[in-house]
Structures are given as C-alpha cells and as structure tokens.
Image (tube, rainbow, N blue to C red; front, side, top):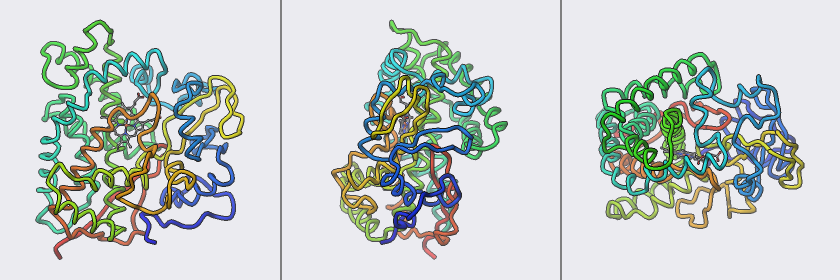
Length: 421
Ligand code: HEM
C-alpha cells in the first residue's frame, strides 16, 4: 500500500516521540501507544509532563468530559510552566479569554454570541468569494508549470478568506499574512517573533473594533459587536480575543488540511483518479465524493495532531488510568482517528468512506466552530485545483519533503509540484 506517510508497521518497542522521524510519520508510534500504553504519561519538548490519550473511545469521552477544564490556570505546575501552555508575552491575559481557554458558563455565553454571527448561512453565502480567491491564487501560477502549493495556495487562501469574512479591509490583509507567517514559522520555537506578531495583531484588532463600532457593516466583526450589544455583554477584550481565535484557529488548520490532503491525493493515484472522474461528471455543488473525500482526508492525515490542552479539575480515570487533579491531558486526535477498534482498515485512504465519525474537528462543547468554513475552503481548493490542473504531480521524492510537527498541528513546510512538462 502507498501511504501519505510511510505506513510502517507498529514498532516492537516504545517509540521516541517528538523527533524529526515522528513529525514525518507519527502513525507507527501512535499504533504502539494505542496498543501498549493508551493513556501515556510523557515529557513534552517544553518540559511539561502530560498524559496522551490515543484510543478513539477514550479520546471521544475525554473531549466531552466536563471534569477536564480548558482553563490553563487549572494546571498544577508552576506559573513558569503555565507560561509554556499559552500565548507568550504580556498579551496573554488579554487574548487568552478566547473559547479554547475557557469553561462554562463563560464559554456558553461567548459561544452563543459568536454562533449568532458565524452562522452556516453566512458561510454558505461566502462560497462565491472563496471560489474567486481560489481562482485568483491559481491564476498566479497556472501558466508556470510548477508551484509550491503550500506557499502559493494552501497558505494564503484561509488567511484571505477569514480576513474577508471578518471585515478586515483588503489593503490590510497582507499584514495579517505576514503576522500569520511569523506565527506558523515560529509556532513551537523562538517566542520573540511570535510575541511581537501577537502584539501587532492585538493593536490592529483594537483599532478595527473601534472603527467597526463607529460604522457597523455587513461583516462578521460587525455582527459580533451587534450580538454583544443585544442583551449579552461582549467586552472589548472578549471581542478582540474572539477575532483572534477566529483568525488563528481557522488558519494553520486549514492550510494543513489543504496541504496534507493534496499530498495524500498525490500519493494515492487510484483514489485521486476516482475523485477527478467524479468532479468531471458532477455538477458544481453536487459533488458527493468530494464531500466524503475531504472528511476522509481529515481522518487519514488531519492537521490537528492533538486537541488543545485540558486539565483535570479533580482526580479522573481515563481508559483505566488514574489522572491526578491539575494534570494536563492531550487528546491525540490523529491517533484516535486511526483506531482499528473504530474504523475498518484505518490505514487505508478511502475517499468514499461513509462510516466516518472522525474526531478531526474535536467533539463536545468545543467542537470546531469553523467546520463549515473549513469544509467549504478545502472542498473548493481541492476541486478547483484538480479541475484546472488535472495532471498535477509531485516535483520531489516524498523523502525530501519536510514536515512541520508542532505539538498541536502537523503539516508540510513545502509541497513542490509540476504539470504539463
Ligand atoms: C475548535 C479543528 C478550522 C475556529 C477546534 C477544535 C478542533 C478544530 C479539533 C477543538 C479543539 C479542542 O477541543 O481542544 C479544526 C480543523 C480545521 C479548523 C481541523 C480545518 C481543517 C477552523 C476554522 C475556524 C475555526 C476555519 C474559524 C474561522 C475554531 C474555534 C474553535 C475551534 C473558534 C473553538 C471552539 C470552542 O472552544 O468552542 N477546531 N478547525 N476552526 N475551531 Fe477549528
């Protein structure tokens, strides 16, 4: 079988995590953990100790467990260690009040507010603009016969899309592209550049909120302000934190879904040919295999390796393992989504898979708010690219590709392709 990653068999002994090989292909290590240590205590590269949950049933249960808090203040370690699990710098207190770092009742209130503004209807109405953005990006390299699909395609699309949706003026969007680039490049590494980018974003968002308040428009940021003005209260900090999480929860994730997804298709010619045939036959907007296919690409090699941090608020038992109060838990979505106890032939890419309740968008009250937008972007990107450049192929050997493996996110640094030569 040809794998997006090498699909090595389960190793005989305990794997070393967080190495270069692990970032390239974490699945053999996950198979070992699922089988031998499904709730496994490990030391993360930052020095923080955490539990990794790798079986599907345990993962699903943990994601919905109200005893696991999202609030980093619940972490039992020192304030020094706490600095390693959130945003660095003095912006923390400010931008930290976003959905992924809070529990009910605050989470319930803020999620209700944003759900009123970020509706599936708004996303559906945005489809023509996503198509236009996709076509513009392809126009820029279509005649060249070669491109790096990460930098020229997967990376800019989500940032322009979410900026447009939020109502960030076009002339300011390249600033976001730069800041987002800094955050991706230095994700788990040097913190200075990230802290500076976050500071600029914070200042920009304060000004944007101020401008929108003065002249509300037909955009998501204005709707958020409107929703906050009707009964429920949305502070300026909360509005900024909300815009921040929408910009950044929806950014690197979508870049990697498009990147990992295209790569998996390039490595599976049979599946890709089937998808291309179905795209030729299907009317636009009636592309069943594309819809199941994008879900399968998310299950098979999804961008979110591990869900974001959770902390036990009382002693809990997961998969028979005792976890003490204050200890961090990381639910490994990528491992759960390859669990043979849940998925038939989990290491096989099957774009037509329908029994596919994967955890790629999480589960429970923190289930991805942007899933409809992510689906729209990924489906539009893959369908448009494969229709316009049907003979796309990898320009390098798979072994020459480099993966960006952080703790939470995993994706390709570059994806060089050629065609028509
Ligand atoms: C939450 C995945 C795209 C906004 C989550 C979670 C996952 C996830 C796994 C839950 C994390 C946890 O429980 O710890 C993804 C993937 C995406 C994607 C795989 C793309 C392929 C987006 C987009 C947006 C977005 C485009 C918005 C523009 C959010 C927000 C949350 C979230 C706001 C927090 C929800 C809450 O805590 O209530 N996402 N996401 N995501 N996502 Fe996404």
